[in-house]
Length: 205
Ligand code: 3PG
Image (spheres, rainbow, N blue to C red):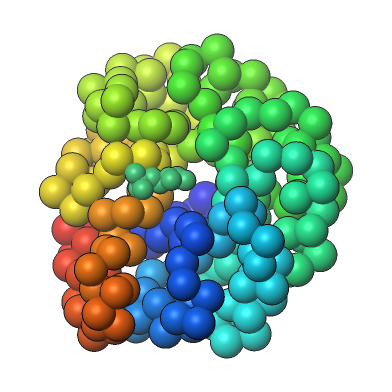
């Protein structure tokens, strides 16, 4: 996963989207070139959406679960076919469960100590969240002593700031609200969403 992220660093965060448009939204992102879909577990329908995404886009993208905050959610996500787990926080028992199941997990962290702790428990990388409140300078600085720990940044990342984080040493960028544009979704402008995705990716490559 970490090697693939280096080639394809954008991870769209699909959170509480209109369910009837889920496949169109996911399809528009895939057409735009994303290789990852993170479906958040803070909605009842999440396991169903993970299954649906696997069925329709499993060949083109790696499907994972986000906002995994409990062992129960981790179990449900894995049963639905999630290939990796992401969380905004570091909950030891959830990470240990993922490790035991052999599923890569990227827990949320905010400090160097949390980064080191997550990595020591078996995280494949860490999600720096909310990254925009720390800024790309934090990524650059922390990469000095902790350069062996892969960092994915999420939270407040925009099309114009995303590149700064990769330049600072992050290997992946999670994007929610700035990529899953509410207006485009409300208008069901799927080609617009594809174009926006292409535009993000062009900046990141
Ligand atoms: C996440 O779960 O990582 C965030 O909700 C995404 O944050 P954003 O909407 O600010 O990109």
